[in-house]
Image (tube, rainbow, N blue to C red; front, side, top):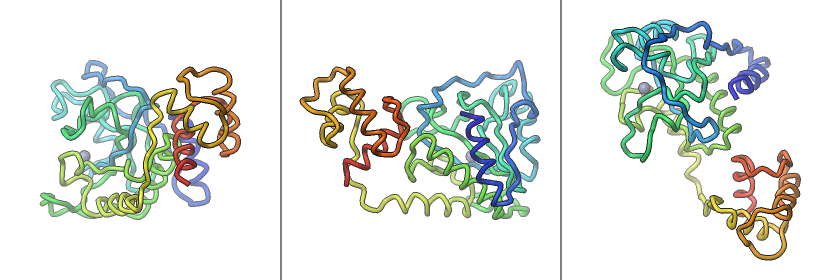
Length: 265
Ligand SMILES: [Zn+2]
């Protein structure tokens, strides 16, 4: 997944004349004795959260700090920087960690379960104006950073089959200053666009629900019996190819999202 994302970003960046993304996993500071991140299932990530550095250092400096013994994150420092991606001032996207590492404690009380496991965290280099940011050096994210972040968001959204309101700022999770007023406007505007009429979202957690969807769309005959056999799989393959998806008979997030849309029209 990591390399797929970098490859997609490279292709998009070329005509945009943006700096090519880099894999920082080998070059950023690590602490072998530091607190280990929990491991999560990459496919089950629910969205992306934007953060700001709240400083004028660099992704390298943040990595050195998070892994240092004096890090505020945890005693003895963390094993690596606490973000999945970072965006430099020149618009370069840096992959900071394996995505399976649940890197950041966001303290999100509104959501059950382990909030660390659920999101891709992205940090913008810089110190941006926002609630309680009193530092006189505070400025704004620049256009290249915003373009880079939106590109990363689009690529991830497509790969995971996320919707617009799966993009968050740290302010949603209890830190009003993060990622600052400007990025909050960007995030809010993306999320607002989503709130236009949203018809029923179908839940396909049961085999029966999946079969019923295929029946409703005319790809499967008979009743939903809850047993996923060759007939069901064959129907799904037909449905996938009709919807322009990879026809592999696997019910992944993209398939679910496309079937959801078809059911609504
Ligand atoms: Zn933050």
